[in-house]
Length: 311
Image (cartoon, rainbow, N blue to C red; front, top):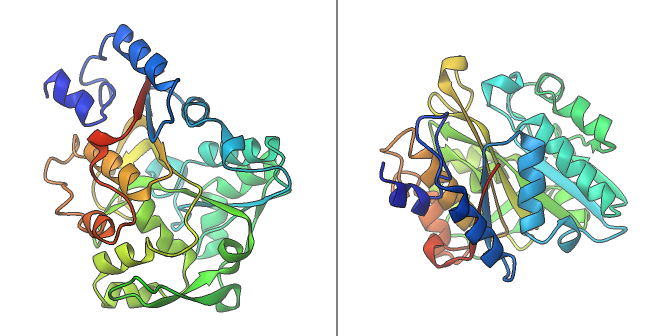
């Protein structure tokens, strides 16, 4: 891949060391220019999860821009599978812990974390490493395994999905932060920010039976949107998603993407993923374009103010 195209697609350097980094002076120029403007999207590559998050949130103006003192915050990672962190089926626990700590440092009264898991919830919470990481960071895990934790909401702009039962924490807490892991998905083609919202609803079966791609896009119009979408691309499951079969399905990419706009951040993350699978396009993961058509965000990321950071 030519360097100019590599940068345009938000690939900030090599994938697992396959390609050289762009010159440091280029990144310094981009960072200094972006510092004087509001940043729409930040892409970081080359560090550990905590370090990449720290760089990304600073570039977005700091967590205090999104979480106010005394607010209750819910963080929604992917914890859907009874898999260890190295298999990349779930969000990296180190990233989740860093976000919880940062919210608390901003004065959040409480930080809760949950997912409506696919595998047994107790095993998912524990074996993903997320439960221990969250508790050590000062947050708490929330129940999400029974229908009584969900309430009906209307999706008035939805084409196929007109209503859904949404987890009470999303409805009752002041702020929610969406923290998906970037991975292949056999149904939705890609699982990123928009797809990760399936973990805040009770009846996912309806989505699968009634045009999954459209339902994902429909839910992106839900009135209470995440304050931030933080895409974990430290380890990327490039095939056999969403569970994966073995470590051979995973690439160590060491990247992170962050934006308020869920469609934009998914577009950027998909472009990054396409380095591993050139067939993966916006047309393939069609829920992203469908979300744009419903005015849930933009895929035209070339028009956004983007800060690219190399660690």
